[in-house]
Image (cartoon, rainbow, N blue to C red; front, top):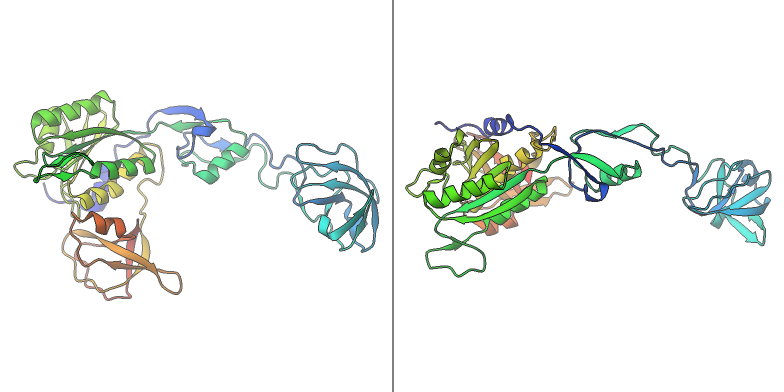
Length: 402
């Protein structure tokens, strides 16, 4: 099977992805979830003319002149409105957020006035209508403000709550089973033989799963045997995972058994080699209703592939209409780079800003896909298209911000 482009690989990963089932959850638990139905406001906000400042609710005509004296006839506070009417040369003490009483159309700032007993005197004239938030200034009853496929962040969550939605319909979070593979791996903190290394990819992938809105399920480490791998695959099926992620063993060496184990279990292979660096040996397929992504074992390869393919897949399964959108952005190269070969390159790079605030991406000298420290320090990946010509420092490039 020949190498396919990154763009074709992503399209093939996302093509069969359909939104999962819908569930209704409390707004308290909805942060990071994706709406399965549009939200229209159940109320008008603010529901009354409200004071934007502390001061006095008055008629604008009565405070247009310095020295004008008004009689204070009551008080309006948030949650405790004044139920009377403001007449000529009358004022109501008012606080931020409180309803502006009937008859008043302006708020005289407290620092623009002097109060003595029940009399308030204008020291700085106030313009008509000042410091009043009109009814419906933010939104009105029945207005659709959030669409299907919108992922609720801290700002839109506040909007949904202000629209009076105590619960929301959201797409189910994808269940993502993560199976690390390899006799050479031990868990962090466990005793390792001289020929073993500490596993870390499973933690990286789980963090990205959570960031994309999925639910990670750690299946542990499977050794390099068909029995151990099959046991891990069966565990993913038992967990009713929507996606199975395998880590390592995706190539074709004598000890790379993952693809064979998946095929023996019934996987329909989509592709397994991509024209990219790092991350060429990536398995994609399906097993029943479960999507399969077999990521490379090298930490940087695993990370980059999870960013490029797993996270968009998780978003697509939650109905995100922009799951396949190109997340790259323009930047300036901080150093010269040589001509690229036939694979699309993702160069770990330091990220700084020029005097105008434009990002400057400087690729590190060593790009070995085993180097976790360099990946952790990087601020971006410089994307170099296949066969890209040499570029000088200061030229334009595209980056994937980390």
